[in-house]
Length: 146
Image (cartoon, rainbow, N blue to C red; front, side, top):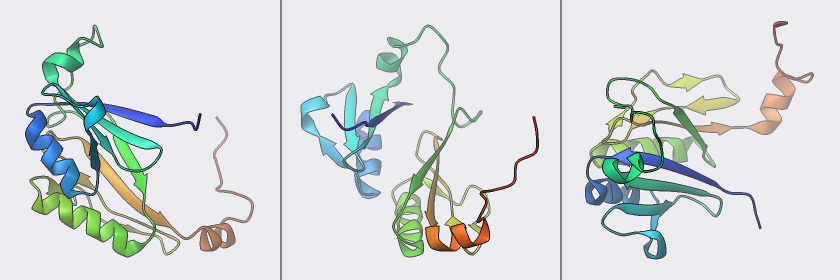
């Protein structure tokens, strides 16, 4: 089986969040969706599991973070071009999310923006020109010793 990632996200309104994720290019997989959850497929290997907060709570003994108040994760997703980065961020803003929650990043070889979904989860779509990145860092990025 191909290795996949399923990102489980607690949401206040499953139907509203399902519509948001469809607007940014995800496809709902009805086989794994109901009133408590929607499986929103971004690619062959990435699925966002949109779970009502009550249902999400059944998977963890810890309190659920309010993503409007605290950052629980930054979800970086690669795109095929700069234009695709712009398209998903603009779609997120129009669909009830918040576009550009921080400044755009443009390093020449890498371009990124950000958005929040209606529940405050932060996404960072980015495009990287691997050939230009390899030219910029032929030995790999420098790291400080630990």
